[in-house]
Every structure is written in structure tokens, then in C-alpha cells.
Length: 290
Image (cartoon, rainbow, N blue to C red; front, side, top):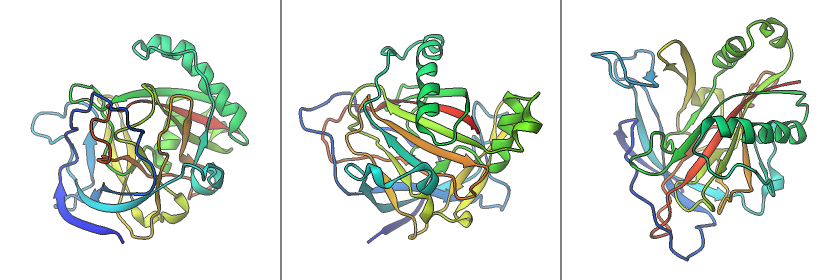
């Protein structure tokens, strides 16, 4: 049974140092772990967060989170039960890559991006055109520039998805927005089997629109929008235990044909393996057109 810890915490979370690995296998099976859910600003204002340093006198963000212990099931062995169209996430296995270093953005774009584009065209039903618009490498290390996000969220909302099309393809946007378009994250580890901070996903069939709250995502030159996730006992959460470098998790963040085509997700601290190595991962974000 789900247990709730009604203590509010700030949206920034300190990651413990996890740099070594024992010989024990990666944790697997169902687990109860703490996930952090959206809690609104106390003054009733619109929630926001700054991607970079906020202006003088402004906080980094104006909302907080509530930490709640929830059961998370292991989808290992049940991969075929989940699809992008029904659950807003899917898995792929045995996907090799020529990129091995992960320390040069230009090299990643020249070597890994074409692999990801082909993967989407080959494995996402209906995909006819793919535009990869950015990527993020995350490392579970206190000194990393980008760490795993331990807060339930969705990267896009309907408004920000349309804005992405206009931002990246302004000359074609009016035409493209009349057809089906999706935003899909392609997520994978880059330093071997995930032992710490695995990624949890909520089956979109168990998530209602009232669980989601738009949050201004303020860049230096523009404002986007992400979705915070309010907790509900109705939600069913999953993770893929022991995920390795040749496996891919596809996360549907938006689908213009399906309002339920969006998957909340969050890293979580898995305490079952002592001395677990720090997770390193890359997520590539794709606009997918039919």
C-alpha cells in the first residue's frame, strides 16, 4: 500500500555520491521508493522555474514538491505489454551504437543522432520524418552539470509542443501543425547497467489530465512549458531493472492525436545495492511527424 510523507521539500535535490560498483547484480523486482510530486506555490501564482541563473531577486523556482513513497513495478519480462500508443512508453533491446565516449557534443550529433533518427523511423509506427532538436547527458555525481531529475514531470505540454515546431521549423510550422506530430525522448544509459537512480515511468492510461500542471520553463531567450505531476493513488509506476547500454526507453511526451499520449517520469533513489555506481545517461528529444 502506498504511504505518503507529507513533508514538503524544495525542487532541488542533492544526489549522494555513487561512483563505485560492487559485483552484486543490479537491483530488480518491485520496489517501494520515494518519488517527488508537484506542490503549488503558496501564494497561488503561476509556477515557474529558471533553466539557468535567475534574475536578481528571483528564486530559481516558486513551487515545491511533496515526497511520497510509492510502489514501482519492474517491467523486465513484461516489455511487450507496453506501447507508445497505449501507455506512452516503449522499450527496445539489442540496439548497438558507434558512439562510446559521450564527451563531445559535435561528435554525438554526427555519430549518435543519425542512429537515433533511424531507430525512430524503424520502430515508431507512423513516423515519416524526424527532427532531433537537443540532448542532455546526466550523471549521478554531485559535480555533474546535469544530474538525474528526481521529480515527477513531463518535458512538454500541448502549448510547448506546438511552440517547439514553430521554433525549429518556422517556415513549415503551419502545415506541420495540421498533421500528427509527436515529441519522443529516446533514453539510455551510457556507462553500463543502471545500478543507481533508475528512471520510473507512469503508465499514461492511469494518469488523468487533472494530475498535470503547466510550469513555465524560463530560458534566457524564451519561455517554454513543462508539466508538473500531482500524486494520485490511481497512477501505476514502472521501471526497467538492469537497463543496459544496448537498450532504449522511448518516452512519449506529446501526441497531437491522443490527449493521453504523455508519460510522467522521474529518477528515483534505489537503496537496495550498496556501493552502486553512479548512473550516466543520455536522452535525445525528437519531433516526429507523419
